Length: 233
Image (cartoon, rainbow, N blue to C red; front, top):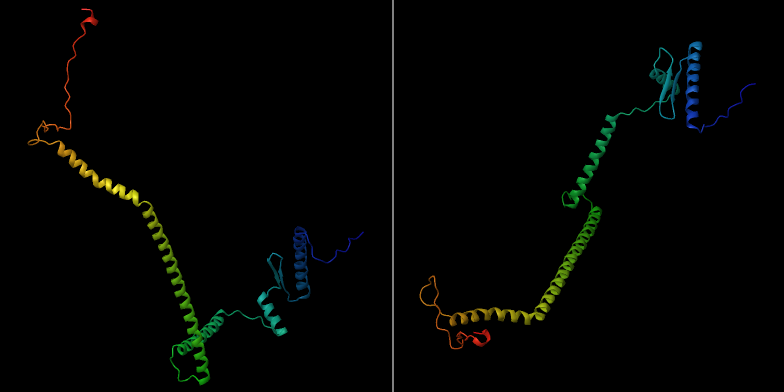
């Protein structure tokens, strides 16, 4: 009993797909070699796997480049070559043209080389310059307004701080005046106390005091008589 016919469609299972690719690639290379040897055919075979791996076969003693070149001559097609030097040259020429155009445009805006400009372009240039000036003025006024708003905000903050300081001084004025009066009275009291106690002569090991003023009453100590009756003598 023969095998059933396998439907030709993409294999969803990755492992099965890889195994099938390896088997059929080997079979294809074998058949290609047999066809080249048996029929004396020039064959060039290029295979890329799903992972990007290259596999190729070329009939000996030819090289793959010779097979591709012969294919191009027969079909009249040519694979474009990537010449980086030519591409760089084209980009350089384009950049030079763009630079020259920008330089001419800048000369017009700065008022240089105006002789070669026709009247129509001069009118357009004038309108563009007026539009630019208006934009610059609008931006300048906007910045000045922002600075003015900031200054007004700072002014309000300073006024609030000044008002708070003034109210605090008014609330604590009585206490401040009382403290100031007390500080001024202390030197006077100290001097009055020194006037009451006068010192004689030069400072020595013993300080001599002046006579005690009359307002200070003198006190005398008297010995008490013993109570003989209580003592039983």
